[in-house]
Structure formats: C-alpha cells, structure tokens
Image (cartoon, rainbow, N blue to C red):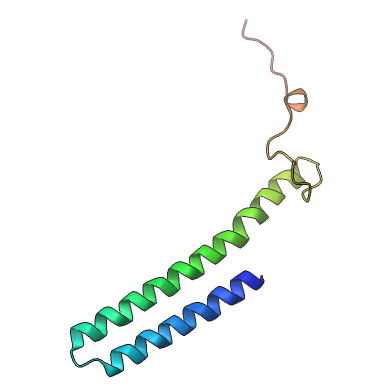
Length: 91
C-alpha cells in the first residue's frame, strides 16, 4: 500500500512538473512534449506500483485456495502432484 501511495504522489509531482515546464516554454510543441513526457512517466510509475501490489496478492490468493500458508516464501502456486485429481485412463 505504501508503494502505491508513493507512486501516486510521484506521478502527481511529475504531472505538475510537466505543467510547469509547459508554462515556461516558448513554443507550444515544446510545452506539449514536456507535458506528455512527464505524464507518461507518471502513469508508468503508477501502473508499475499497481503491479507490485496486485501480482503478489494474486499469488497469495492462489496459494490460499490450495490450502497452504500464503506467507511462506517457498509456497508453490500449483498443487503438489500427489494432491491432483487422478482421472481414469482412457479405455
């Protein structure tokens, strides 16, 4: 959660910096490029932070569904072979 808050703050600061650069620019093209570049970096940081939070949570949910302790570092995402459902061989 802290990573998400930091990324949101950083992306906001980058958007503000892009707006400040665009205000001080003499040409509109430079202003547009500065604003777009800072906006893209801000959004990329936010998406990266979301992935840092969402992917481990999803993996923990998969491990929890398999009946194991989700906070163990060596907990596999998939079930062990012995616990898999054995199907009847084809006739």
